[in-house]
Length: 391
Image 1 (cartoon, one colour):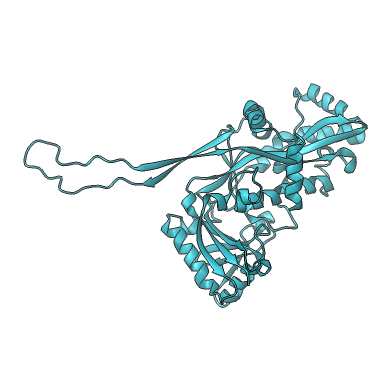
Image 2 (cartoon, helix red, strand yellow):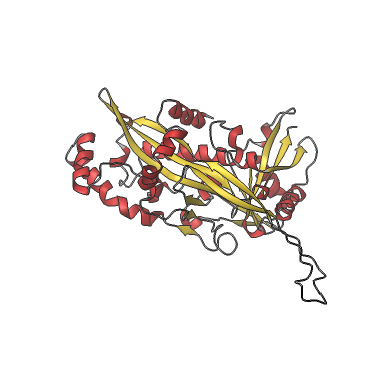
């Protein structure tokens, strides 16, 4: 909750723009984060959920390609600010002249060292597909029903036969981009921009990245229940599949299979389903499945640093965003499992994590790290969640 308070505080202080300001600055925000990248490009999908094949087969990672565009500027800033002791504003002015840019924004999401946020487990935020969007709203059209064919088309005359004309049913979904971020004073540690190329990550850099990822994790899974001012998440858009009384003996293997079956019934692709659970539920599932479970690290080569269970082809991941089942009170329902087809859900990003200087206050320099994005579900029925009442 502390992280959320930091983010909300940043919003109240005006660090992050309002919805009307986002709309007015859409083009500059998009260009600041993605340059000339084509609209609706999948730039991050470590599970390959938006590509052909089951999860883990065809991952997408364009971050290194993006970082190559910013690395020369970052190195020059580091040289001016650290080696030649240029004041922050003068270093920015010098870069503006040499590189023909008056904007000093560093998209730190693309920095290779910022791939994963710890110490919390944030698999939803780390691994959800991210797609660039150049609008303050993201539209998605869902086909909810198909036209029914008819039989008896044979005729004995020259007419077309007895066709029945029908169309499919469609639902339009619209998601507003939301801004969220945090700020720090430059005196806290070395300015982030001049520190990104050091072998060890700066304290400020990791603190901002970690705080934002933890906020995103909670918002993606719990939505407005976590932050009413943030974007809607899986719990807002999905469907309550079951509510369990933890005072009773639970068959976690059957509970898990029931959740997966419901997702499949709603049209989810089994090969792309991921189930996010709290730490206690993960242990309970692990105990029930220990004779047949296969352990799988979905992103070892990317250094994700967390383990997943794989059951019937579906990956189960633990997340700090969900309250621990053992801590749920007897008169409270809390969400302990969230299942989703990750190919139907993504983060639409107008601008991913980017560092920006703020106005100078007294002798101090300040900078903010902000994000402009929203959770998008192309098929909300492909999200099902489970609640539990405590013992």
